[in-house]
Image (cartoon, rainbow, N blue to C red; front, side):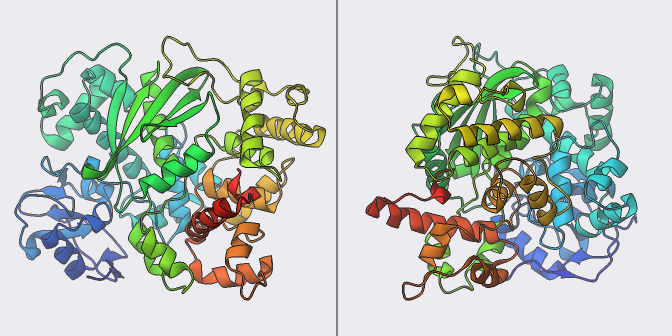
Length: 519
């Protein structure tokens, strides 16, 4: 079956309200996916059933409704705004987050900001301003691509996260309300009664048991398969900073710091459930949504591998790489400043040298974590920009020029807290990053790719890319690479990872190391 396509259409919800006012999903393709319980479209669309008043995922195990009872919408927020309630069997809150909005990069950036809490303390007008557009324009884009307003999307995410906590943890209802961002327990209860017709405690299908001290909160984060866990874990393992990160037993562990508090995350693969199992140990429940959002970005859980493959496999050089690793993801970063520091430290030296410098930096400037609560091998948090003094880098053996760049970068990041957040466009993000000390074009694109999750970031001057795309021993120039990569839009970052992965195998056999492979 081909991809779900968009067509001009108007459908009404159970209560007669317009669900998608300008664009709608192709009904035939969606219904075929529903009948097949096709996991490729889990999270791409939701099925609202007029006869029952519920909305479901494409993989719902319930008996499929007749087509004339179905209304297909592009988001859970659209379904809830039209008066439908979530299905208790397929649990829409467990569907993989979908962020690959090919029709609008602005919507994708807005979703990333919303996931990071942009609407918690500010309104839609402030969000629109950050994206360089008016509030009405942003609302139109959300209505067109998601069938709901930005506020509705944020509220639906909060409810879904709360319901996941109810099902998958032993937190009390008060703790669930606090952890999912509800302002009060009363508001939490009212929302669940209105949406589900019952209180939140009635939705818990199992008896809560006392958690072992220090065991943390464990959640399953779904993705759209395939997912190349070995490649992503190998990428992180090669670059793991001793004391901050540990990759062992097919599991990733690291120290995290948010608003001055320290904790840890532990991430393992659950291939049978198409999910990652994440265990969070952190002293403040209110930080849980941000921790989960950062973890999703770190492991690129919002990618649509099928859409990416359809574009990249058209290139005869990329096609065999895509076929060999169809679930390859772009590894993100826990923190944008950390990614920038890593990139600067890795300029023109080996992976081993960059890691030694990062380890010295962490032990000199990073905050130590309590040994009683830390996981084995984890000792320090990566230092934030506020911990870099005027001579902080010079005392740990970093060359003077690089130390000056790091100190200047820290000062800039401290003065501009949103430096490493999504900007109005990739070009704006790169230009702003390049204005910071020590950041050139390659480094800016690298930060955009990993920290800002810009799917179309591209490192045209990268030596590894030029070498693997050489023809007859002649390497393409940066300008020639940019011209060729036009056909890879909007997934140029994934093309970079495919080429890097192929080049890493060749480089390891030849004993070579490039800057592309060190940061």
